[in-house]
Amino acid sequence: MKMLHLVTNRKLIPDGNIFRVIEECVNAGIDSIILREKDLSYDELYNIAKEIKLIADKKSVPLIINGTLDVARDLKCHGFHTGFNCIKNKLPDFDGIIGVSIHSVEEAIQAQNLGANYIIAGHIFPTDCKKGLEPRGTDFIKKIKQNVEIPIICIGGINETNIKKVYESGSNGVAVMSSIMKSDNIYNTVHNLK
Image (cartoon, rainbow, N blue to C red; front, side, top):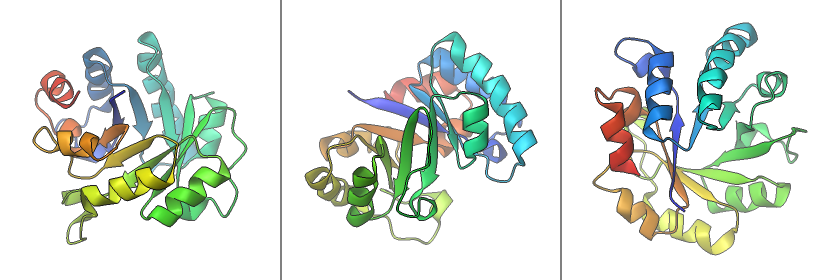
């Protein structure tokens, strides 16, 4: 099953209205929202997440909190997402799904062994978010697929022209930030990626 996940970055939104973007994504059929606003305090993130959860819950779209476990717990969100370097050989205690960002096959295997429900692998193609860093390419996806059984979600420079290659390489889904956050027609962008 092809799944499309939104990773947020409110700083990329031309009018700055994250709630409008979330509403449009939910109405367009996004499969989950990963709220990734790393610069916010607990209170700021909690307040934004609370509003987003109300929007997402209307269409039963899972909300996953990136990086701030207490917000994920306190709002009883569907999931928590963290970076591989933050897990220290043990996943946190959380009553929901847990995802881990990985950047190597070894990290993917370890995340699976620790009990992660899914991994986000990247970056696959060149992206402004990782300017100057060499992308890992579709062979990276194939190698991960040979070594793990949990779902692989790919991120990084994925768009309508290359998404087919990502799925052909074994990805279970894609996570997109810039192309949705910056879009002037979110409905079309989401539909073209699904």
